[in-house]
Length: 263
Figure 1 (cartoon, rainbow, N blue to C red):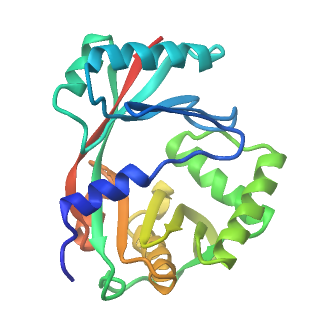
Figure 2 (figure 1 turned 135 degrees about the vertical axis):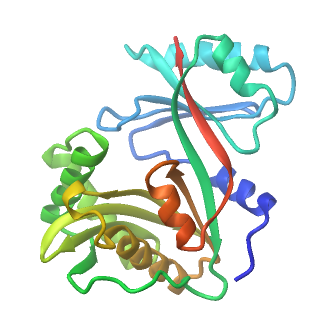
């Protein structure tokens, strides 16, 4: 498999923007803000900041708009992408930004199919989340591993409907992993054109070391390849999923940092 180019990965990252139903999106040529619904883990985010002119003036404008959207939120999660201009991280720090997260941007070429992920434990199975029961189990894993918000019944029903629609139409969805029939892992996939966007991979601590993460990875990549994806793209936590993804054939193309900017 040929390694993707940095330009291809940066372009795919720039297209990857999560704006769920109920969110408010504000975009300019310099920045993007998203005010998420109450159920989301992050209330207010600036996933894109690429000023063409004066960075300080662009940030002033973005923060003014963020305050308008805040509605009780006291900070915005601002991401420094792999294609951000030099000095953006220093600018965020100068404005009181505190480092919240670092993730490696990782990608793999899928033109020749799913990479070899090694043997998997037969006791580990994966399935698409298409029922409320599986959606709740999926959420339970995320709550335990990521401290995500616990979804209410309405959100659980919405997850099941959306997951079923995505999986049926070849656009990915949510995946639940089971070890000896018990839910132990969860993850998500969005197939957008030729990009396979992998996110939210989580495994309960007691099930780690059994290949659950790799099983989730193979399940999603197989679906993505079947439906035309040629690039697998994800953002892995440096100390946890990052090493697994590298062993699976993913290559790191830079590091994204997220700062919590006070409003």
